[in-house]
Amino acid sequence: MTSFIPYGKQDISEADIAAMVEVLKSDRITQGPAIERFEQAVADYCGVQYAVAVSSATAALHIACLALELKAGERLWTSPNTFVASANCGRYCGAEVDFVDIDPKTYNLSVAALESKLKTAQAQGQLPTVVVPVHLAGQSCEMERIAELARQYGFRVIEDASHAIGARYQGKPVGCCEYSDLAVFSFHPVKIITTGEGGMVLTNQEELYQKLIRLRTHGITREQDLMTEASHGGWYYQQLELGLNYRLTDIQAALGASQMQRLDKFVARRRVLAQRYNELLQYLPLTLPWQYPDTNSSWHLYVIRLQLDKINKSHQQVFAALRDAQIGVNLHYIPVHTQPYYQKLGFQWGDYPEAEQYYREAISIPLYYGLTDIEQERVVDSIRNALL
Ligand SMILES: *Cc1c(COP(=O)(O)O)cnc(C)c1O
Image 1 (cartoon, rainbow, N blue to C red):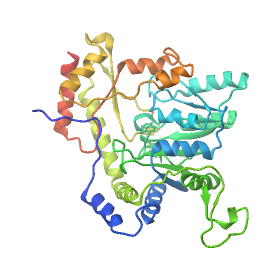
Image 2 (image 1 turned 120 degrees about the vertical axis):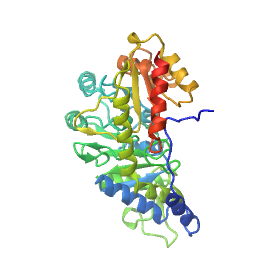
Image 3 (image 1 turned 120 degrees about the horizontal axis):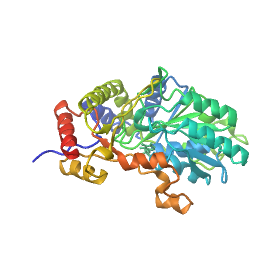
Image 4 (image 1 turned 90 degrees about the vertical axis):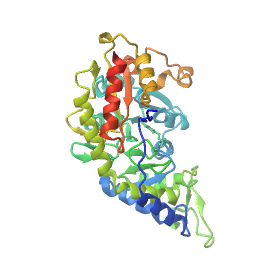
């Protein structure tokens, strides 16, 4: 019986487990010292001022939008080639969501398409309040150009860096927020590091940081400076705005802080595996990932595109043949605008042709820290057979 090779998988060490057990034996199992340790470790790694740990990247995107005061009727734009959460955060705030088609080389939001859509929107008085570039597979978007457009057209930027902790752009860590207001990481088990479920928001702006801290815990503050009247006593707190309970537990944060110590090792192995795929797959009828010269990906995903005019199999057939061979391929992503929820809001097939063409050809193949060379060779052999 051949074993199943998933497309992604966490790596939990004995040290990770020991770190969680230590919290379980302590007095504070939520919002204790491990949260601060984890936040500090990520902030130091990224070279950013502030980090706020939350229960998921979805929660992180939501409070990032709230911190920017995205309101009902305003607009949030993102890529159609992403997980639904990158768009849904706008809907939680009652904003209109719209999409910018992808660059056919990087599969990230196209800056040229963004620029032309902004021109049209300006003429119609419908500019976005927030744009959410998504660093697909761990490759940064062209953030410098996006930041220029943000200044010119007056929108704010949230990087959905769910795939990209450990990646670099122009030599600096993704998450440093040099070209954005906020950046978001996910710690779901298939991502680069994990806390089971978890996410983080990063920023260099103190005012945003103070809002994020409150929004994570019901909009409540215990700081006298921020209160509208003198404290009534030691028990007193005030709710200043409508927040949520998006806290991460200390148990999870201990896992995250421990995983951070191996982040560089995780990413280094992913880079080696990606380079090996580049070599092992180069003569097959496939389009392999293209890397923008300014970027150094964390390789969350390795996406191949089938050259359908060169093979006698359909996309579905190749995908099914790989699953039959116990290769846990996947597809990232179904274009978000084609989801029934978004179709009900007025989007339809045909709206974003590049994202749709990508969807008809793309397959994510296994890539994770623990993937062995021999398993990787089995993936490559299975792909070769599936294309015949
Ligand atoms: C995983 C992911 C999310 C959501 O992350 P959660 O931590 O599961 O909420 C958002 N955006 C992208 C691009 C993702 O890949």
